[in-house]
Image (cartoon, rainbow, N blue to C red; front, side, top):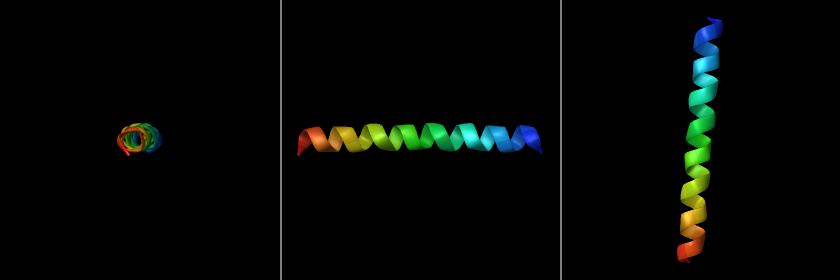
Length: 30
């Protein structure tokens, strides 16, 4: 269970990081 929790946490963290990069790109374009 612990391994799955950590894996999900890391995956979510990476997803948030990607979303942040997309927002930065949109901000530059605008």
